[in-house]
Length: 393
Image (cartoon, rainbow, N blue to C red):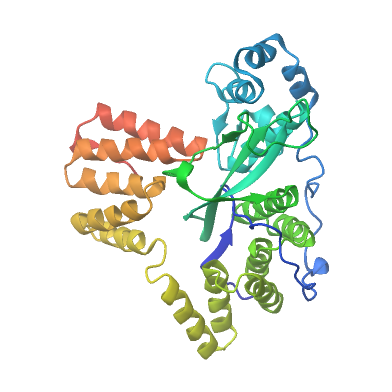
């Protein structure tokens, strides 16, 4: 069974969406191969994505919650109750996408999970909810050899005027809630997403997360559910193609990826997956053309400086490693792993204070609770020990 190395998935921990009225696409060719995969190990679907649990219903009727609404008003009272450091104490954690009820129970969630839970509470209180995709630069990460691309979503809350059944777009009560906003988020353009987009993105997230965990059968069923919603963008089709690649079904992988490319002809993610597949199936000229298309859009691939820095670090060339890690930090300042390895290089160069600063930034930019704990422990150790005696890795 053939396997391909560097695979890319769009996993909207911070989301991407489509503007205006979604264009209608023809039905894709047969994309499913159910007989090739084992039954899922868990229920697949998004039926309960926005459903409130009994505990959530009890919470919104509690004296403490009602006090938030009374003191701050409907929209700001809800956000104050959910995200203040003195009440629920919710924590940002990108390791798994959860339903509204799961996010509330865990007191943690990634951006999509927090948006979903906020929307569930808001609707229960009779508010209007608008999901919005923010036109910010994509953010890359990597997990287990799979490259993940994240964009950004937020949510706008409002309520109807008492004298009208129509939502007032200019109402002073509309409140935009942004989790981990990008720099200058208030000045960035946004576009509206429908609930169906959020459902498809949730299913796609679960597929990507299952694949990263090595649960390829579950990943297939989650991606199948996402594709079955027939989303207008390429995300779910790309994820399905990656899963087929990992499973060794290269014919089905190409079919899914070409469907994705039909929907987004300039998608770097899809092209970077399709190129190696073409090469693996002997179509060298097509693969080379695909590589040229990618290079014309993105001459320096994500992680290129980082990978070269890791080579330099292993060879003991700490100064070169530092310079390369600094280049990655400059173009991706919110990716914790770059800060961490820059701290390692700085420590090896005897620059303990600068290393501590970079490690502190790694803690601040990490989106996973277990990783933050690891970095915090290393920073505490670094502060206790002399620079010459510390090992960060």
